[in-house]
Every structure is written in structure tokens, then in C-alpha cells.
Length: 125
Length: 183
Figure 1 (cartoon, one colour):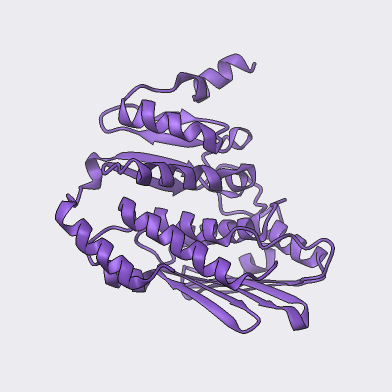
Figure 2 (cartoon, each protein chain N blue to C red):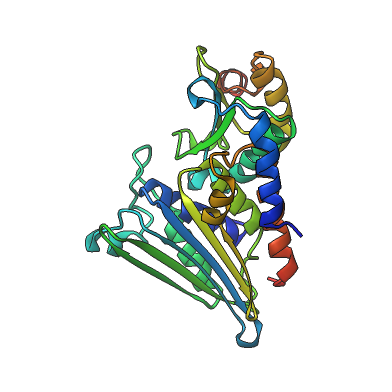
């Protein structure tokens, strides 16, 4: 059973290694969590990003949420902001797309084109 | 429609966040002997005026600016009422909002409570500055989760530190599963 004592131990271990980072130079992953997003399956997408970031021990990534992004028919929608780069919008997200976005885009800086809104709109006219 | 009650709860919590709440208290109570399930969300956000409060269960009322239809509260209400239950909404400007849905456990149309651990994990991790509590009670036995306690233990370490986030997820899962509510 998990306990607060265990959390205390995690804290002590983490204190030595952590750089208390400034969120200004972090990559931000923003998941749309309005009614439309939630109904379309945004919750498992959001938690998949959290799990993946935790698993890979990524220190400079912040996973956040927002309201309705405005294109409800393409939900779940995820926006990725890397510092100094343009925003990238991924649409119709599922949890199994998350690993690739984290590896290719967030870690290695290469946008996953076929998941983007631009690609979707061009190929689904 | 949402597949699980826990997704409605997530949706209602999103309203609380948008209303500027700094404390959001979530509860789920299962009483098998009385065949009832009660789910509630209380926040200290900006609250609603009487006029908006009366209209907010109407799907054509919303505070969002991207569309003119808001389905969150109407769907939650309809789901509870269709399952032999009831819905309550109280709000005061400047004080906060309380939303409660009650269900008859044995009703055919009652949605499952669903994955409350995922709902709490999702909102806790992405809203570091907001305090959350979750009280889950099954036939008198309770599990209580309070991010303020966790914050106190952690000090300056952020919740989304990988080891901490894994701990929070497991803590929620274990606490909820240990009570096994069967709903």
C-alpha cells in the first residue's frame, strides 16, 4: 500500500537530483478538456502524456489542459509548444499516438506530420 | 452522452477550474443497503448569479465563447434523472458552486461510476496550483485523498516530478480499489 512516508522518501531522493526548472523554457503539451474533448476521449490521451513523460523522466515538459479549442469535430486535440518554435496541433488523438509524439517531436524535435491538423484537413476533404 | 459518471465529474471539475476555484472537493458515496450512489463536486470558484443558475441546465446556455451550446451540465442532469435519481445545483456569486447527482444503483440505465482514479489523476497533475480532495465512501468505509497533505510532504518538489506523479497515480488506484464499491 502506498503511504505518505513513501512519498517523503521520494522527496528526499528527488531533492538531490532535481533542477527546479523554470517553466518558461519547457515544452508545453496542452490537451483540450471541454465537454466535447472529454466525450471524444481526451482523458486517456491526457493521462497517456503524463505517464509517458514520467516514464521517460522528461524534466522539461509540462502537460497542461485547456477548454474548448474550437474545432470540436476533430477532438481530442493536443497542442505542442516547443520553446522558440511554432505551435503544432494534433487532432483525433488516441492514447496509442502519444508515444510517437513524445519520442519524435517532444524529444527529437521532428513533428509527426500525419497526425497534424494540416495533414488531416488536406487528406479528408 | 458520457460513458461513465467519472467523465461527467471530470467535465464538471473543468467548469470549476474555469470559474477560478482554488479548492475543489469531489465525493462519491455508495450505500448498497439503500440502493443509492451520490456523486458531488464542490468548489470555491466565482459562482453563478441566480439568473444564470436557473438557466444553466438548458443546453443552449454556456459560458464558452467558441460555440453557443453547452452540454456538460444538461447531460449530467439528464443521465441522473433517467436512472431514477436526482440532480442538485447550488451556487452563490463569490462563494462557489455545488453540484450533486444521485442514482439508484440497481437502475438499468445507471452509468458505471467508472475510473475516478484517472479523473482525479488527470486534473491533479495538470492543475498544480489548485487543491483537490476526493472522498470515496463505500458502505461506511472511506478513502480520502487530499493534495494539500501531499503538498505539505513534498515541499518545493512539483507534483509532476516523474516519481511523484507515479506515486499519486498508484495511491489513487490502490485506495479506490481497496474499497471495491462494485458500482
